[in-house]
Length: 213
Image 1 (cartoon, rainbow, N blue to C red):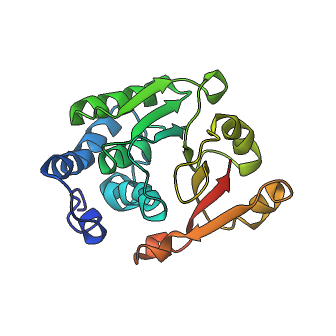
Image 2: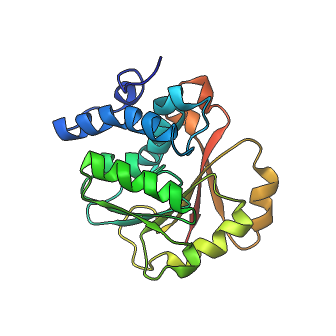
Image 3: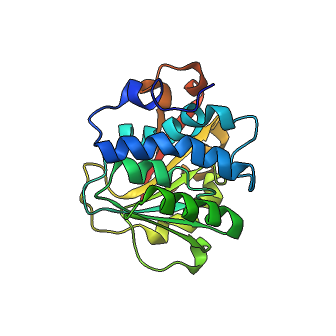
């Protein structure tokens, strides 16, 4: 049963502080416990939480290390993925997690509090209600790109501080050709296979999509 990070996260990442190791160590049990009350992860998936959800979320860190002081929005976070694992990974980066479903945000907030994360806030909000700007907007399997881009682009800051210009980073799987084609007239989409970073078969048809803001 895979409910510890030893053979998943630590297989690919090291150099964590004791605090980060403790937070990652708690994360699986916290999700398992809360998922019995409020379904934020598929029940058949919960025993693979580290591989299927936490390591998947951290693929964004492989793609683009966020600079200290960055502001990141996790749109449609559900129960806090990918925002919470990334907030542990990048303790000097500010994360705002939003979702339109109150009970899912309750889970995200309870986990943030249990872990003592000071750099993450979860709000029951829709993107249309949000003001301000962010270096990157993240979305994990939220909706099709043609619907996602209008929700995100206005929230991307024009002040670039990373080696990639600010923009949208989304995690998706399967055949994305038609979805990318729908937006390619106006937006260039960079598609990066997650199998570039991880060797597990689970990631073979999973991708990071980046769209410049």
